[in-house]
Length: 105
Image (cartoon, rainbow, N blue to C red; front, side):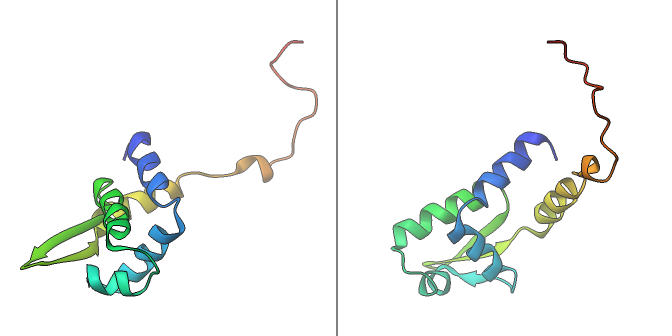
């Protein structure tokens, strides 16, 4: 997964409602109407959130009659988790060396 894909997913998850939607979908596929019932938002607002989540490929959608069902794209979600897990914070684990900066004043 490249940096652009990671950034797009991070941006999508940067909204509280979209995080809640992902949490709901982690329990399995849901109809849009079930997701909408859990929020105090309009249907067009839900559609906007779902568009963002599907465009970054974190969520799959499928139509069945007049209903749309959403589920987490497990492959993409796993890729994202793996990519993010590669970030570390070694600076806090190592002793800081004072006065050894390569920058010149």
